Image (cartoon, rainbow, N blue to C red; front, side, top):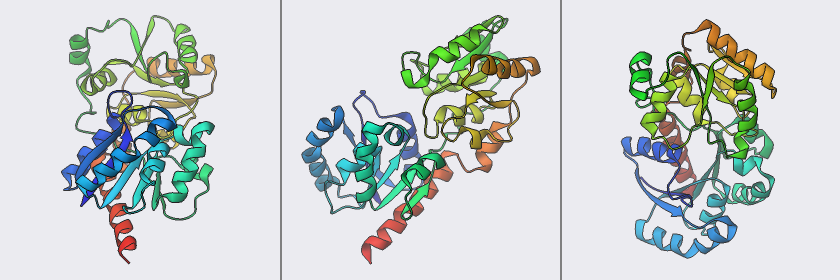
Length: 308
């Protein structure tokens, strides 16, 4: 099976949750190539129409798998190759982008949503599936905290909290996280910016907790990766986080209130220890290979219908 991946590359690179998903598909025998959209905005996507058609003629894919609504709409400007589109959150939650996603939903042969909330918002009844992106459990795994702390040169006497993104990303709501951590004694909030995937995994093993305060999310990889490392978590009720961490020890849902977040973080710091999040990730089938198998099942179903 040959699958063409259509996605944004306008930041200079393709998002890791997409490349890791593709690597898992490759590991199960799916042949893939990328078409990355390097220009921004809907006009940039529209300008990519002819280059995409050339890519389709060269690669001759059986399926096009687009990521995000604008990519799905672009992919559907041709009607020869069936299109499957995955919606990751911002393309549903941001209204000015959602209007383009609505067209993609109508035109795609099959639509995949990474969270139940987003699936419910679009009210789609057929040819849809709930498939969150998987986690690379070979990279994100429990490591020896003492050894990692020494390697990263983190101060052992300071309580380190890993924030779920770059501070300047307004969607991530860093101001609330900073206020909450400032109320803790001797605690430091680490900005998740400029690290490699391996370094992120090491950080999740070294810190005392991970913190998410985002205004909107789909099915955040940050949470699933932290769980795969058995890192304790405090998060607001955003995306699918509440369902994913449900029943996991040392993981808490907090209100959008700095004192409530501080209180939940303090519970983790007082208890010490790790979570059992990895067990939940594997049980839910949220590892990369399990998700890749679900995607292949979707691909096969679409091809069968398309050939009828």
